[in-house]
Length: 310
Image 1 (cartoon, rainbow, N blue to C red):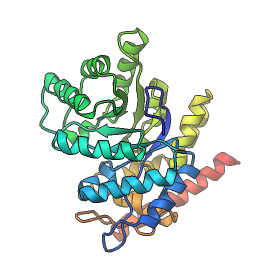
Image 2 (cartoon, one colour; image 1 turned 90 degrees about the vertical axis):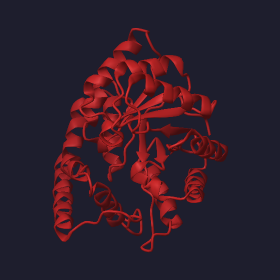
Image 3 (cartoon, rainbow, N blue to C red; image 1 turned 135 degrees about the vertical axis):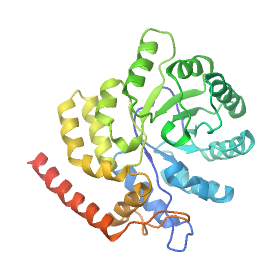
Image 4 (cartoon, rainbow, N blue to C red; image 1 turned 45 degrees about the vertical axis):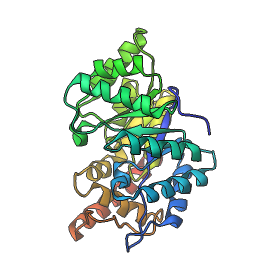
């Protein structure tokens, strides 16, 4: 599998980790999930992220999930593996192992202890040194990491660390950050790296308009993200927004802190992608009222898509 580069674009779906009702990893559902994402038009997959419940897996389980996914795509799709860890040694160990399996690159989020610009830069300089030639994605998600990475710091990282090839942009509000980053690369002050955006796709049309290259998130209808990115790619912004509008109520609901992953897994199970919507403990669960909300949103979404297609 070719390595991840600055030219990456499209939709890299953040995959859930399927569990059986007893909490064991469901390998059959992993296979079905990978096939589903590929069939939906995903450009690549990202596994062992925060919403992949990576912190709940043992080191052995993390390797097993990575092996299963990488073997299933058989080189057809690039796989990015989340390797964030409290220390550089376990990060490097997992990164080396998954790259040996055939991963395209790894993703690293900053630890919450980083407070200053110099600390953030120094951390990623250490990450780049530890990972060697492995290309990495800088995950900028201050809503969960509590680490705010300024544009000037990202620019410095991009200038100095050539193995940083992608920004997973999840700042909120963050549209101005995309514009600022593109401005510096357009002026030749930094490399132009790939920018793929998260936050459940809530701002995807606007992000594409600001210069993003696509999405890296796990909304339960990846075909929406694929459709929006493809429409923007052919210059049809109105079509992108029309498609996005049909899915927005569900995307908004899925972004709730606390039950968002439960919602995502519920819909994926309902669609037959995974056998069970269970999370490994500790995890959230939907109430009967939550389920009623989701079912109503799904029904309205279906009607809206029929209107668009008519």
